[in-house]
Length: 355
Image (cartoon, rainbow, N blue to C red):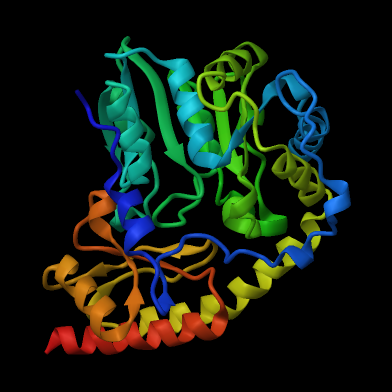
């Protein structure tokens, strides 16, 4: 039996938090006061059916699609599970990027799929080599999976690359949860590039709304219906107050996006100053997104992270969770004062590590 286990999620739930947390990948949660909602607007009495009508309509408007292409889900992780689970059967072949978000790999293994990986190499700016993917595709390949922006590097996959992947034959699942971090420069969702594309995303990472679990899938209507039916095995009836809060949030994303931009505009120069000062790291400047993925040139990174946590009260994500054991993932979505101090402590820890 394959255990339904994610080492990264165990880390995130038990060891990610710290006094100075650089391990979170999204914008820190916003105060409820930023959402114009009152208790009187919320209800426990939910109408029946698949999806909550006002939320389906709001998501459809937000994504410029019809409501029958939208499947609401409890965050991007559940959206990924439903999208993958409705598309494949045990033994099917799936191609997924490397490095990638560990929870995606955990899902693929739990579903007993034949997993093949294509490389996104740091020396190439983590771009996708379409010809490499083409060589890996076989008649058994059911799905190609990638993240855009890339988790863990924040690299952007351009439209030409996405279109080329869509021409290879299998469906392409694109996790776009970080893409809104480009703000007004956010490109067209891959869903609009053709019916072979399936997209997952949520309001979690960029808008600081993790607590309401407002995620969704965009898929052709026949595939969307299969995903709704799969969700019957898990969700039954979603928490209705959070559905209502999702509708309110979607109508008020402007202030939440501006808050995110302010946080990233404050933290990104501090991160880049830190990265440019370190000869003990291989890295590239951060252009956009909420995360960075430098390589530590020497030593056992797990031992370094333990020392960083215990002595300097600072946490980062160990690269082993992305099959890159000599890397660390740094998040810059936290409070600017905390983030700046965390980076100072990371520098002190690296100085000590080097000696």
